[in-house]
Image (cartoon, rainbow, N blue to C red; front, side, top):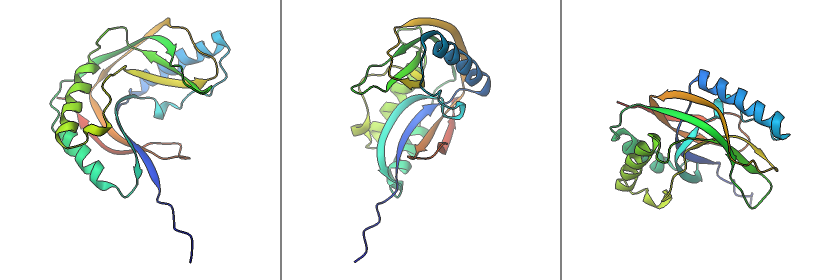
Length: 185
C-alpha cells in the first residue's frame, strides 16, 4: 500500500490589483516606512500587491465547482470603475509576531466598499455565503514584520480601479495564478 497522495491545495480570493505605476509608488512608500521604522520584513513583490475583496478559503485544486460559482457571481457584478486612494500606513496585530503592515484608504467608506458589497451579494446568491466576512477594511499589505506600526499618514497613492480578478495562491509559489478577470463597467 503506497501513501495516499495529498491533494494540492490553493487559497482562492477575489481582489483588485494596482497598475504598475501605483505598485511602484507603493514600493517607494513601503521602503520609506522600512527605513524610518527599522522594519526588517521583506517587501511583498509588486506582482502580489493587491486589495482583497473576498477570501474564499483554501481548497483542493480539483475544486472547480467553487471557481465556477465564483465566476458566475463575478460576471453578474455591474459596477462602475472607481478611484482608489491609499493615504495611511498601519499594522494589523496578530497572535504571532508576523504583523501585516498595511496601507489604508482615508475614507470611512471608500468607493471599493460598493464593489465589495455587490460582489458579496452575488457570491451569496450562488451559495458561497459561508466564506464571506461581515466587515471589510480595504487595505494593501506591503510586508510582515515583528514590529507594530502605529497609524500614520503616507504620501497618497492613487489609481483608477478598472477590473477585479479571481486568483489562486499556492504555498511555495512566487506568483499568483489569475483564473479570471472582469472589467468594471
